[in-house]
Amino acid sequence: MLKSIKLKNIEIKHPVILAPMAGVSDLPFRELVSSFGIQKDCAVSLTITEMVPSTSQVMLLEKKKSTNKIKRLYEQNNSSNLTSIQIFGNDPVFMAQSAKINEDLGADIIDINMGCPVNKIVKNGAGSDLMKNPQLAEQIIKSVVNAVKIPVSVKIRAGWDANNKNAPTFAKMIEDAGASMITIHGRTRSQLYSGNIDYDIIRQTKNAVKIPVIGNGDITTCQLAKDMIEKTGVDGIMIGRGSYGSPWFLSNVIEYLKTGQETFFPTIKEKKEIMVKHIKAMIEYYGERGGLLNARKHIAWYSKGIRNSNEFRNLINNSDNIEEVFDLIDKLFI
Image (tube, rainbow, N blue to C red):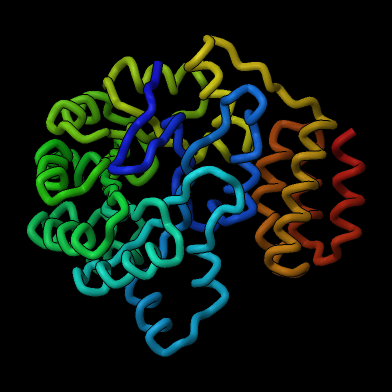
């Protein structure tokens, strides 16, 4: 159902893409998601990092120092799939410099965030706030495109609010500014993550441009992935919250779109093994304390729907002892 996408000299074989999610799309999670479906040729081809603050990245590296937090945001996948590094900001110069830094670090694609609805991003004139300022957005895109040789993509929303759904015209500006791909989330900024996505505005956006368009929003089942494609005609899909507690989900979607079937439904034992592998990778990456703190939300997602999981999550959230955490997991996942 989906064909591969070519962006300059890069091919996205399976355009079912892991979304950039703050606090979620770190290196351990991206690697885990990429590990599924390899034997069936249904592995994820592209994952996107958490948002990298362009100004902070440039200023810290100019001073020849960086924080571990910033470094972790743009670390590359060890697997063979492609890595897109997403940057955000409202200054064309800093955005261009950040893009070049990330290209030099090995990014395959630079993604510009013009869709984040979070207040702390929007109030600084970045993220979806840029959809209210297409002139500045155009300057940023052109600046980034001119700064790098690799493809540049842009992530947007349907618009600012119900009265300002400007995604189709905004997308045409993005294309004219030189970007190679667009991702559109089918909600406005004012909706945040509530209400329904607008398939029609995604379809209009797809029809407004010739470059590939990726559909995003509420893809939590394989059927909804198929619906997104059939109702909008997009060239690919991006999955975010559907991967929470189900890092195998994207591979299942790829298989479903290819064959009409999904074959990996982990048992409780298998889910436990995946979760433990994930936690251990996070501890190795962040250290024991940081790993446990960052793993808590993932453990909650993995345990959703299991009997007595509410009490389990309360105990997990109050434990700083790795042995105790694994003991609690052993008692629940039986």
